[in-house]
Image (cartoon, rainbow, N blue to C red; front, top):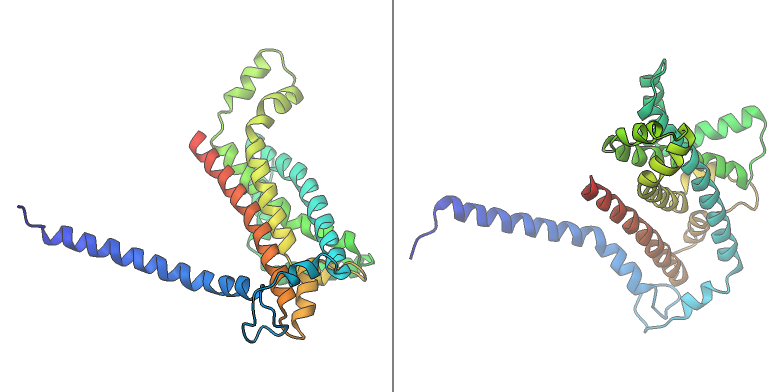
Length: 270
């Protein structure tokens, strides 16, 4: 029987320590979400103590007109903002990757500023701009504000795909008689589609979850779902808010998981 060397024993303890640290970190991060999910089934209307299991708070959400209207507003903003950003973000990423022009580096840096600048700064700047121009706040101003950061996220994901894409594919299509538009639509776009979908899903989640920018740019009657949740928790956290938060996290988590899965598949293909 061979004895284990000190280095092998140290490596084993190091792996065990890292695993324990990872478990504790996940427990610390997800314990509040677990508690939130459990209390969304609580019969008590004040969430102070467990009174029994019930589905009534989820059923109540289906008949809550304010929640349904805010959900409709959030979906409208997210779908329109992501759709416009998908087109503009893809074109921007392709232009930055395939063409050379004066000020390209400056434009590239400015295009990704929404990923770096805090949301509060974007919200205040957008509100000041709208007030200076004289545009009345409404649901469409929320859409315009969401396009700003959705555009940057989609362009970033598509750009990461373009880096690993063979540029000779387009050149081969052009040599075979295809026009630049045909080469883009029939050759380049199918290769970029998984990245575009992943970027759209990620942006959709961010748009649905956004509260700060929406609250600064929304007009009367343009309340989004996160704004509705915030307005209700000021009077205390009730089980129906817990249920609404659980549903929102499940939907957002599903979209985020699909987006990350598509990015993983892209990395394997590269």
